[in-house]
Length: 317
Image (cartoon, rainbow, N blue to C red; front, side, top):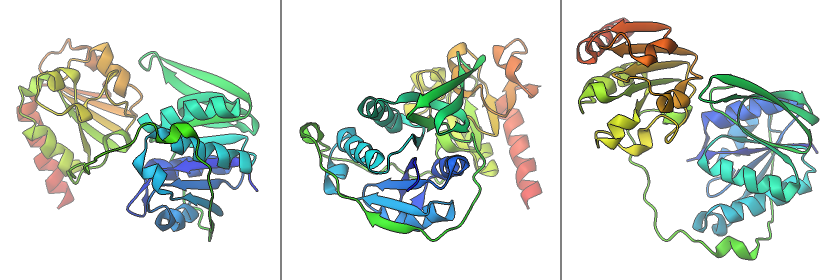
């Protein structure tokens, strides 16, 4: 069996885009074993096969859906030991970071989170990270067993269809698994837009919106983009914290980032500086965000964004 284990995110029988990227990256080390955890795991097995997972292990115990990360760590750690994994890859995220940290301790492994590239060979895995608010890129080598979380949009997903062998795994849970339990949950209200952290295009608004995100949302919908917000906009109560981009919010790395009415404080730049292309709209030509801009427009977002939205809709027919 392969020595590469990939832990995948899934919902409603579909893999997240970040999971298809992680599977693509894992194939450079050989045929990966995919692990799907939680309710509906079996339904996502075929999707894992589309991206090269010849072996898919599923864990669907009720324990996983009623507790926090502890039972998930039990599951991943035991599967990693069963397949003698030398590399465990996960899509980056809040839960993945906690799982990865605990897993590294269990496996006595090296840990790298939010990698933007992974390579090398088993036993000597190399990674790149964007650090210090995106001002530096570090390269690391993990000798021995490695646990790595890969940032969304770091790898272009490439299908490699196979018919997966699907197996249900049996897990033994530790005493800590049931200490914290979920008593109630509500599904996140769907906006019809992509998830912020995995979106290929993000349109963010800041203080310059004056609390009116209509134009920001309009451009996002025309581009098929996610909506983001600066801390100033969130602190003012103009937009929910879940959409905050920055050091104390979400970190994004889209192909295109549109910053509208955002000054570009270092805390915000820390969350979007690895974007492939940055477009800035701001009335202040001295705003720090212009230093990151591939295209800068000095103007009022309430005038500029509707004009752009109209043109985009016109070109899309």
